[in-house]
Length: 79
Image (cartoon, rainbow, N blue to C red; front, side):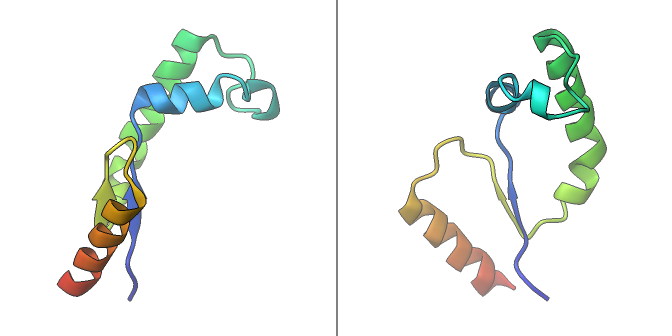
């Protein structure tokens, strides 16, 4: 058994990361930004039941190193 972590950025963060990489990613290469948003929302919804099984879920956009370490230690101690 191990510690699983779900790093869950917002849809907006994912769009900003992917919109300039579309030509390098076949699944999203021909999508407009509106279509990209819908695609990401759909994939997140499909994957949520699996991601939700993670031991630790981090939803904060800009978590600092100290907070991350503290969350990891807390999650590990809780197992």
